[in-house]
Length: 344
Image (cartoon, rainbow, N blue to C red; front, side, top):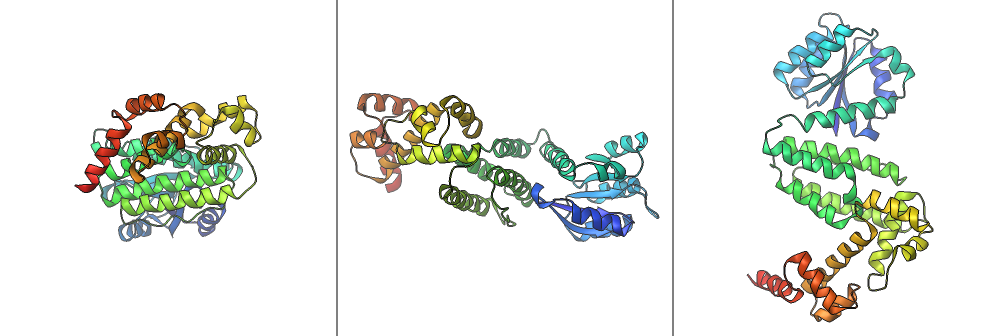
């Protein structure tokens, strides 16, 4: 969650900005208001703040002076500057001090508030992912950001496991947890709009393990909700197609069969399937079958032939060949290694 402080000497302007914008939709929350720069500096020293919307024309301490002082005590805080004037020198100063955006109050009254917040959040994310370009932790956060924003993790089980692994590999300091939390809030909000679901409240996580656990429960809950609804938009249609594939894995599945099940033409289905899942229909079907086979090898005493048939492979030789290619071992070796590791 991006924590926002609004600084403006005009009380009505502060309240208007706080109440009219759809903050939560974009993973943001207004945590405080201040009527001048001095009060704002005190607030920032006493409370966590990520982003400040600051009026540039204020008595006692201008917005520029406030930004300069804030940079000294809280260098990670980002700024959006507000003004009634389109002043190029102000824009230059804002950028020099690391401001994300310069917004005319006049144009803000005319513009769509969602468009403004969308632009600001995108800039905020780009900034936090480039804070220390050569640091290993920052590279890890960029990878997580890239995985989150594709949203393949929601439709694709392997992509989801990859996202959780990336989270657990990142340095487990509080600032990283907060950054990952902000990414999750942003893309969960987009996902819920896409699936036409009510907004969820994302908690403050104490560590990455808690975050990964919450994401798993959240994903399962949304799956259950969507599975009970009639067919809706494209995202929901692809999710239901994946449900169908998993439930009928032992059968002869094709794009035509699954597309017909969800009420879609084959050509359009193929186009949107990869858009949401990140893989073609054939590649994702192969991935799901491999994951099912590995699960059965780990958890049952079924023969390799039975595992192959249950996973949708009618030819045992073909199954052995592609399993070897995917896992660098045969199904029998995979099972032996799992049993050996479990005993160890």
